[in-house]
Amino acid sequence: MAIQVLFFASLREALGVSALSYELSSAVATVGALRESLAAKGGDWLALAPGRAVRAAVNQDMVGAAHPLKDGDEVAFFPPVTGG
Image (cartoon, rainbow, N blue to C red; front, top):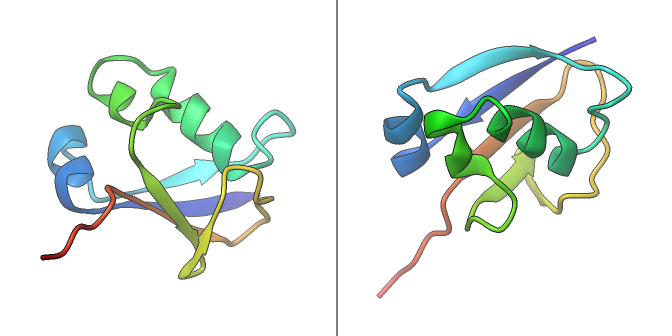
């Protein structure tokens, strides 16, 4: 089972990548677990670590960390947007 993961704004710049394909496993069944798995790569990937200000959307709907993932999902990570 695979999902597409997209990165936007400062996350894309920090990671040096705008998208990647990710193979889901039973250990990575939620958005939060995906973030933790990616952050575990260390280095620049720590920008996704829990506690960092990062928003997530699955299939263009805003979701929380407990949102379940399924084959074919598109997950987007981006920093909070501020307006003024």
